[in-house]
Image (cartoon, rainbow, N blue to C red; front, side):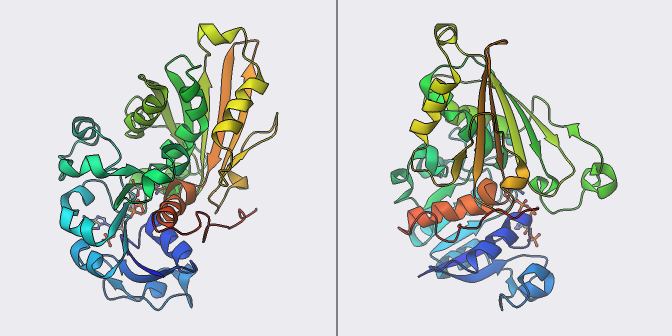
Length: 350
Ligand SMILES: NC(=O)c1ccc[n+]([C@@H]2O[C@H](COP(=O)([O-])OP(=O)(O)OC[C@H]3O[C@@H](n4cnc5c(N)ncnc54)[C@H](OP(=O)(O)O)[C@@H]3O)[C@@H](O)[C@H]2O)c1
């Protein structure tokens, strides 16, 4: 049994962490942190947890929380973790960050895309990128600083990694991504109000979304050369879910010989034994409703010989495999538990 704390436990990803950790057989959740709700009963504020937890919100520092917890989840806006995590804290506790502060290996790239100074660039080297299907379980097994990927990035990377690794795609990859509104967090904002979002779809942060360098970093590592992506996110009127559709033109060398069967073979080889990746049968493409509330990523593939374009579609739940579920998957690996423990939920339908 290990002890856990969450800082930012009243945000969307924090609430999802509580939901999943409350019934994790190897975790005792000790701390649910919030500044604005300190002193209030957790279940009094978050009705879905009624009768499932006696915890209260507390406004304890990261240092205090790490002193009593084996693992601390940081479910905070970017910029806060890097200002607070220290080498001393990492000696005591495993920091499992859901934000962006330790995902990018380059301080310069982080500061350029996030527009804030990185508070602890000396720790970037020891952070492990928490995408186990790509970095491998061994990379996570002894790390005390885990940088969980973004939600869009998880879908984008997992759905194109076999192509990047095999070096068969021309760049840039064109990624058309769609997200439900919970992807933007729980803080109030005019652009996220019901009347603004309902019955409308829009592209946003065109050419400028912060997940772009993260996707490029990981695909570039797999390819061994730069992989540029043209990433365009869209906001759609649903609570949860990410759907990415990626278009890739095969390189000239492979184009004449590529078949859907060969393409599928690359995915089967790369994801063999990865419980949370579901490669869909020929002609079947992912839908967000089939992954709702689960840690699954569904992937569908096609190669259009008429246009010479590979099309890969992926769906996941942004709060589960895109955030809290993935963070728990990483914790399981780090602490030597079975990777899937606590994450066995079948998606909720409808
Ligand atoms: N939403 C998603 O689908 C998703 C997916 C993957 C990753 N992420 C990342 O996960 C992190 C959390 O996202 P979220 O959607 O859960 O955000 P959120 O709903 O906006 O919640 C943010 C939390 O941080 C706390 N907080 C805000 N400012 C703070 C500060 N200055 N110091 C300490 N605590 C502060 C808030 O509580 P108090 O104000 O009460 O302290 C709240 O609990 C973000 O970095 C986000 O990019 C989100």
